[in-house]
Image 1 (cartoon, one colour):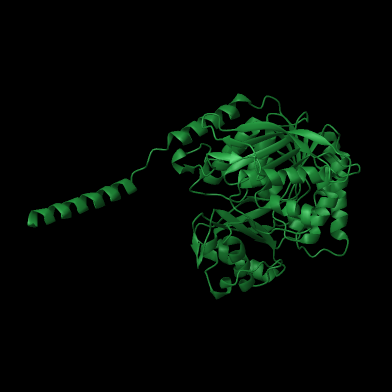
Image 2: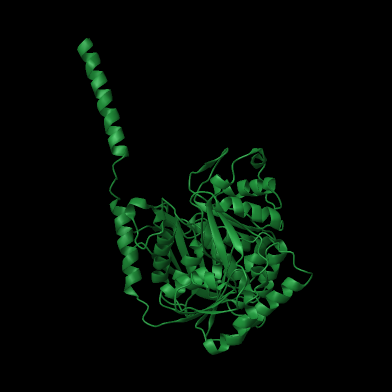
Length: 483
């Protein structure tokens, strides 16, 4: 009896020791991860950038202050009542809005009109261990990625000489100088992070600013004076979310948007135009973007939050501030089809939308009109996918020990009953196909187009270092091979 009891004790001890051992041993990455990585890198390297495309990009720049959100915003009772507040004026409103997006794992960027409170918050954040400053703003981040990938880049941004040193040597900058750079406070959090009663479903960030320069797209006129001579292959419009809830005088915002539209119209027909979307919460601004900006772009880039926001506005005249952080491929594809269908009905002197790129945590989706100038969608999706991991993990190489695949083994091409289902192939990870798409609203003349769709899985970084700027890097990387 005593011997049996002793054997049980020894067995328990052995099991406990084994559990402790294996918990601390690096588990080799699965063959699936390795196969997917090999397939993605093969596509990326198969089409090196042989020419030096010219890319012009606006507008604006800032200095980003990165801080761990939970270390800056200690949980308090105010956060028990999550609420979306457009203009944050005090700590309780900041806590409520942070909680609103944190619990959904949704990225957001909001204006703070209370400059005193903003400055105080920045001062506190700057002293938190691990906080650091970096070059910020959609345009400079995208410009830097384009430049590193081998493009000739013209950036429209006003910044101090000191901040300009953060840009790659050789990049052309126009816009002039400012006495001091605007600061954007970026509160990051990790997947599975606990904050009070909330658990974030994914890594992301919440951004606040008190910016009085970038909402005006103040480099616009200087940019226009050199744009024609630069003769870009691609014009990128970005950073317009800075106008969200900014206190413009009546009509002032529409005037600036109209000038941006005119600049988009001023470039040659051979120059393609891309509009990079962002987190918009103001209904009037979104309506104005659909009127002044969206119809004049050949290409749109957005994430899994921004796509349903645009789609819902186009279909129902409403905004969607937060949505599924890991949407099904079928859902995203159906929303992309709706955007294509509705925007193609635009009448006037705008451009025909021929490209959509949606980047999600789990996969990249690129849809282009067959026969349009956009090329190499398969390789572009692969490059965008690899860039997602490299940026978020902060490494030039993909580390499989810090990777996971959360995309399903198969996916439907639509939520409609009887839709085609595609099995995931580890050895050929990017799946592409063609389909016919209706491009006219009901009741108008029928028109169809053949579109190519490419889906690439993302080797999701499980130990995120950077979430801010991920979309900008991903979109730029996807565009590089297609222009």
